[in-house]
Length: 192
Image (tube, rainbow, N blue to C red; front, side):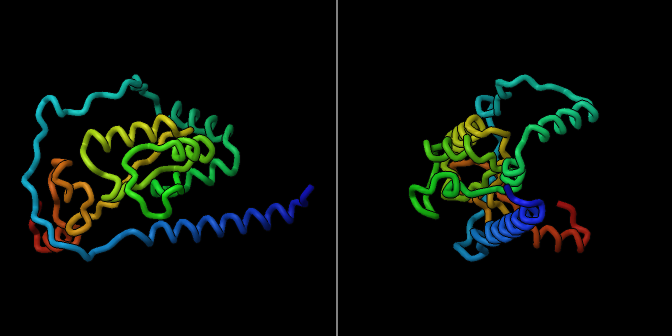
């Protein structure tokens, strides 16, 4: 059995490793270089394309009830599960069978297995993972169903030249200017 001092030492090392790994994940995958994209027209979905409410009933909780629910949920989690919740990973981290860069657009058996074993906090989608609204929605739904805890689903979508969803015509959405343009307009008193 390990002494308390050794446990603390290993926890500190593990936490340092988690922080370094998280920093590596957040500093990769973004690029401001690439072909200039034409802005798209504003897209208004038809009635048939309007998102349908999820099958799960909505439960309204007071702030106190939600806090109590969260405390009970966290009390059941191991330290490893709590640390895993800090990570938002790319799909290749959930299924390493194709290497570190692959155009996953479906939830694979490898992803299901990883999500059942490691309750990561979320996933980040890149342009390589996004095809159409319907397929992307199905991918997200399958990931959520196979995760132990609800996932934060994020997209590498900074606006301007880094617009993974807006640059994909099949997603039929509005492309917004980059944040720098918005900030410059705000300084000149122009409201978008």
